Amino acid sequence: MTTEALPHPDTAGGTAPHRGTLIGIAFAAAGMVCVGSSVAVSAAITDAPLFTLQSVRYALAALLLLVVARVTGWRVPRPRGREWLWLAGVATVGLVLFNVGVVRGVAHAEPAVIGVAVAAVPMLLAVVPAIATRTLPSRTVIIGATVVTTGAILVQGFGRTDAAGIGYAILVLVCEAGFTLLAVPVLARLGAFGVSFHSVWMAAAGMALIGVAAEGPAAVTTLDAVDLLAALHLAVVVTTLAFLLWFTAVGRLGSGRAGLLTGVVPVAAAGLGVPLNGIVPGPMVWLGTAVVAVGLVIGLPGTPSRRVRTRRLGRSRQNLSRAGS
Image (cartoon, rainbow, N blue to C red; front, side):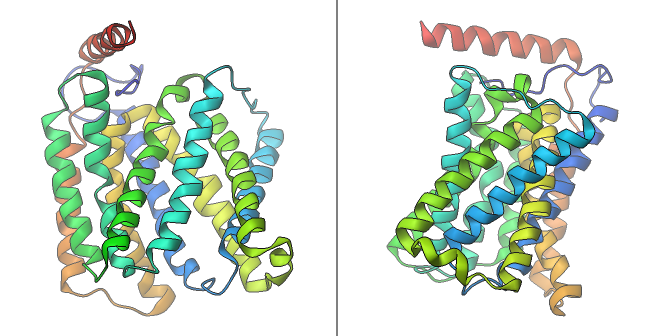
């Protein structure tokens, strides 16, 4: 599994962020703001048949991606061989099981508990690729991920839960990290667009099957105008736009450094709550936001030079080759 973004033409030696890195950071942050907007929308669909609504959401997103491809002339790459398995993993783990974990988890735990689990994602994205490739993780990324996670937890707060709630929180954490990590091996060839499209239509099919089994085939007829508008927002902003921004950022930054930007989600959710719900963040939210910002300052700037990145990539491939022999 490639842990660093491939060398980029506008990346020079030194540690200051350059154009390609800044674009990746901006894309990741924008994508996480899009994801943060889902919090306000989710409050309006608590009574809807969730799995059926999610299948509609992902189906709409898949159709929208096809329209974008047609208008822009982008080619939709066709997966080959094992790429199908990686994409199925992204859809199953990162989308279907993630939603199942959230839905079942909030029945046993307060939403803040699930939020704290998601807040720990930067640590997994920083550590897991290094373990998989038997390389030392970047010290600045690890420190930054620790600080970002702490800040995100301060923003989310803590909540009450039982043993099942803790289990579902762990599932949500693993699935959220898997969404990115399982996409890394196929990003280089399929690109952000290909990974987004294929994982989304697979998730639509999976959610449809769960919806029919759990909510009945007639559940789609119970969706009202508010539910459909929410599904449209989730499809356009939280899925299509956010996925393209996020996977593009991962391709430029690598999963570890891009993962730091997941700390933006609770901050964005809290910030959007002001104009949407009139909820002014409390002191802990402001403190958490400042801590997240410090973590990003620590973890994001250290861009390896082209030569160093190429050498790391070569070592990673050698380690994977030895591990597979």
